[in-house]
Image (tube, rainbow, N blue to C red; front, side, top):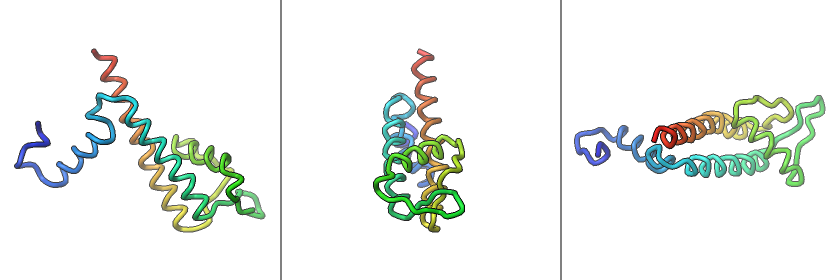
Amino acid sequence: MRRRNPSITGTHRTLLNLYKYLSGYGEQVITPLFWAAIVLVLRSYGLLYCGIATATDKQVPLGISDGLQVFLFSFRNMALLRPDTLIPLSMTGQVVATLQNLVGPLLFGLCALAVRQKLKR
C-alpha cells in the first residue's frame, strides 16, 4: 500500500516500482532469474558488438563464432568470479561490463530474498 501513498517521493515510488517489476515484491522466484538471463544475453551481444578480445599479448578480437566463450565470460563476470580470459576493447564495452557487475548481483540477491520468503511460509 506504500506505493499508492501520495505523500512518498518520486525516487521512493520508482524504487518500489522497480522492486515490483524485477521481483514481484519478493514473492516470485523466477522473475529475477528471468531478468538476470535477459541481462546476460544482452550483455553478451553488447560485448560482441562493442568489441572484446583475448587477454593475451596479441589481443585477438573475437567474432560472432566465439559467442559461447563470450557468454561464459559474461556469466562469470555477472556472478563476480572475475574472469581474466577476455577483456573489453572499448570504453562502451567497459561500461557494459560495469553495469552488469552492478545489476547481476542485485538480481541474484532479489532471487535469494524470494527463496527465503518462500521458505518462511
